[in-house]
Structure formats: structure tokens, C-alpha cells
Length: 501
Image (cartoon, rainbow, N blue to C red):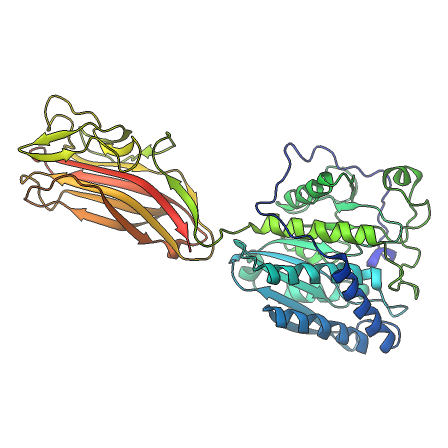
């Protein structure tokens, strides 16, 4: 970490006014094994020991570190890319690992630098962050996590020489690729031996130093803070000024955040009262040969590894497990269905109601029961004095559902119950339609036309594949039409559901 180049004021920084309500994970994040994280650190220590005592840019220890992580990620099912760049006459590498699935237009990145200084093996700076995010990535694979957002993990090269790797990565992206990265989490030094618990001040609630991060940074900070609140560990802010690998991301307008446990500065007496430890340096071995496997506070490393997992699981969206219901409405409780603005019908408008039976010439045109329960969307729910009193007349009537956000992956299926009833004075211009509205696009997924024949009301089930709308926010539009006032037309819809498989 480049704190020797850019000193960060740590004392007296307080995150205030962040959480009006706790941020909750939408699915339980896994507990990250401290043993596994320490195992990765041991491997990084062994690599440094075998390669001149460090894992620095352009040195064999760094490339061996990249190879170690890449082999594990490849075996776990990630798609990995080893991006090369040149600095100081030496080739450096970024390791990028994409987890298949999720909306690639809404990508959450998680990163930290993998290189050390030449003076030592860099086990806290930044083996700790690198090992923690590596184990979180492997837990994504072990649990089969399929979030709504696309997940991309990164290990940066040459951070210690001025954020060279992360700058090379961001600069290599097209404008469209940058806009697809909707959040970046940075973890640089998360196991300092005399730790503090600092969060990058994405909303500038501290009011010191640099201003707030790009829009969305506050939510990242809030999510991290919520985890530490849940385990009873207080946090404090550290100035959000781009002094680690999140710098190129915020410069590109990408929201960011992360954790930091302190480097060469000394812990104040107030911070000792807050977190324990001593008034010595947060990391006495910062950028030194003694930054070895023994230079780690296991409690801090364990807490921060779990905080990383919590934040990834929360911000990525838990996804919708196969075979579960994404959205449903049985109409038994009133929800915010709204009437279409272009409706022309003069009577029998679609409404949520408890239908009454109507019959004409021995034909049941409206049933006295919903498909399930008591309520349905129905054209003119009450019976009136005759079958034609409250039937649909004069044109089109429609209702729009509340907005529905669909998961980004899986097979999405709309199911519903419906009927269209009419007498032989109906025509093919009469209809019942179910349509999907997404932005300015409307697509018909069910279309039942009328006919010049008697058709009695009978509940029928139907389904439609909505997978083409994965990751989008949609509304359902129920629409019925009577082309002329002379015909007798009734329609109904009930028991709507969208499931993912």
C-alpha cells in the first residue's frame, strides 16, 4: 500500500449518520474459513522465501503468486485472464477472474494488489487482502452462488509503484466496459497486527480531506458498516482519496469502497480504547522484511474476510434459486395495478373484484368464482340487472401491474389463469391479451381473439417464457377489447406468477 507516498490521517475520523436502517444481506453469506485464508498466506510466504524474499513487480515471486491464484480459480470454474503491462522496464500482470453468470452490464468487482515491496514478502501488505478475496471467490464457486450481478475478482500488479496495474486495467477498458462496472470493492491490508477497523469514507460523512466518491460509494460503505455493527465492532472512516487501487475506478466515475486496518501510523489512545491493542504503529513491519506470516492479527483477518463475503453477497444480489417464485399476485390483497391511459371502453372496465355470476341464453359469461380464492381481475365484477348490464362495451380496457424486477439468469416463466367469454354476436376484433411492458417496448405473450360463436366462461391456465427479459424491470399489462357495443364480452385473469428454473 502506498501510504508512505500519501499519508492518510487516521485519528478522529468518525462515520456518522450512515444507517437509518440496517443493510441486510438478501441471502446468508458463508463464513470464510480463517484456516483457508491463512493457508493462502502460507503459500505466498513460501513463494517469497523461494524467490529472493519478496513478491515484487518484475520479480519471479510475483509471477509465481499470480500462477498460484490462477490455478485455484481455473480449477474452481472461473474464467481467468492474465493481463500484462510494462512498467520500469519490467512486465507486470493483473489477474482477472470472472464468475460465469449474472448481468455483465451490472458488474461488481472485488480487488486488491498482489505485489509486495522488494524489501519483504508483503504478507499483510497485501497478502492479507489478496488471500481474503481469493478465499471469498473460491466460496462463490463452492456454494454455487448465482447472483443477479456479474462478479469479477482482480489481483493487481505494481500497486507499490503507483497503482500501475489497476491504472493499466481501467485505461484498457472502453467506455461501455467501464460503464458496465457498477461497483468496485478494494481490500488492501486487512490483517494488521495492531489493527484498526477503517472504512473508506464514500459519502464524505467525516467531512475531511477528499469529497465523496461517485454515486453508489455510500451504499458500499453502509453495507460494510452494517456487517461490523452486526458483530459489535465499531468502525471509523478513512479519507476516500484514491490512494490505493480504487483510485483509478473512482477517477472513472465508478463507485467504490473497502476496508483498511492501518499501516505505519500510530494508534491513538482513543483508538486503543475503541479497539484494544497498543499506541504503537498499526503495522510495525509495514514495507519491511518482517512483514511475514507472523505479522498478521488473526482476529482482524477473520472479521474482515467475513465482512468481504457479507458485502459481496449483499451487493451482488442473492439471485433467485431455481424453482422459486420471483413474483406472484393472487389478487386476494389489493396491489398497485393501475388503469391504462389510452382506455376507450365505456363500461365493464377491468377491475380487481369478487365476480358475480352472469348467464345469457344458457351461456355462462361470467363465473361467480375466481380461479383461486375470491378475487380476480374481471371486466365489470357485479352482475347487474342482466348479463349485458356490466359486460365490456365500447373499446379497450387495461390494467398495468406493479413493476417487477426479474433476475438476470435462469428460465423465467409467467403462468396465469384466464378466460374470455362471449356470445355469437362477438367478432374476431374482440380479444383478451396479456402483454409485457419493458421500457418503450411492449410484447404480447397471450392473445385470445373472439369469434362469432357462443363461448362459455371457463378458467384456463397459460404460460409464457419471459427469459428474454432477464435482468430487466417489467410490468404486465392485462388488456381486453369489445369492438362494438352490440356484442356481449367478458374477460378475467387470476393467479399470476413468475418463476425461475
